Image 1 (tube, rainbow, N blue to C red):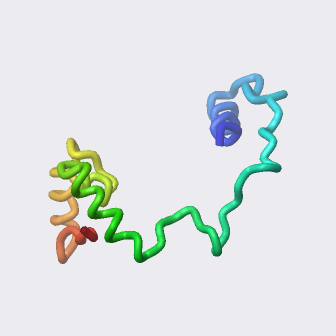
Image 2 (cartoon, rainbow, N blue to C red):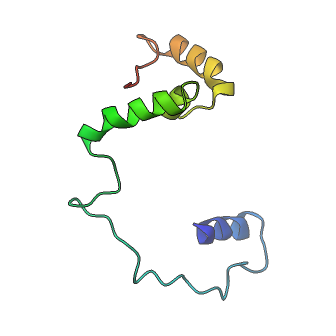
Length: 94
């Protein structure tokens, strides 16, 4: 990702040299790879347990996690969604 940012900055800002030039890639030969059999995600039957834990641990913040919007911006986000969507904002599990 850093190389993409560097390439864009080098091109857009007409920099004389890439700041990642000469930096070796990380050795990823021993990194864990996720597969269908062992995904990096919750199984569907674990979602109710997850949402219950969120409600208990973070009662005022669970909507932020659900919507991906910080509380400070939630009112603006919902107002904008309700004026642009015919059925209003969607519902979140939990």
